[in-house]
Length: 306
Image (tube, rainbow, N blue to C red; front, side):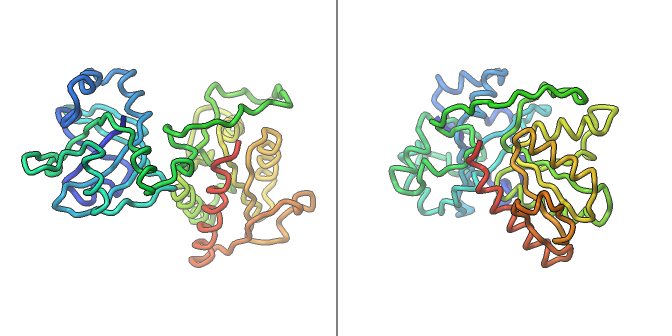
């Protein structure tokens, strides 16, 4: 099965949330399938979030579509609000191609059907990725490793070192393969650097946090440790030789997280860490654009790793 989210607004999917009337969920959907989502209970929401999703527009817009997934669904009055992500590994599918694929995808665009002219959320009993793969539009083995519809055959990683922290509490939340944490001084000159990192994470289909954006414990370092623990990638800015950042890089290395060092000065990288590759950048418009591009490339490389 797959989700079809269709909107009459040509900017509906420019952000990361979409809202529609609750009654339109299940339109143009086989009755036995739509019955499973009548209550929108936890099981139904979990199933919807596991499906690949086609984001498309009503025919009058003549726009192509994107493939992605549903991150979250919540009720707001008589509407549902959908938080979603596009698969960064799958480019936009042109309008003409989707018109040709519509019968195979059970999108009812015939002369007596109005599906292509109505904002709605349908759930189709079709394997979307298989159809796209069979038509050579995508390579099913090369979709985002963060997508809930990924078929993984990789064996589980064997833990070789068991760590029992004496100073920190181990968080109850598991590691988030889409989470990037940024370790840098809490100072105004680094705000634009953080924004550049956030843009790179979005490009790679990930999201970024830093410790000053969360407050779960009275002790700041516990929040820092928890953030590193939950992260798949940790970006450490060594600019200014901040001792806290060095300490946080050591925690990330010990926990086996992927570390991307960045710095504005080669001299700020300690001797013991110079053997690791790092990204040198300038804190200006052009330099931050380059930083975004380099970090996005590195994150894309790390996306499929344990």
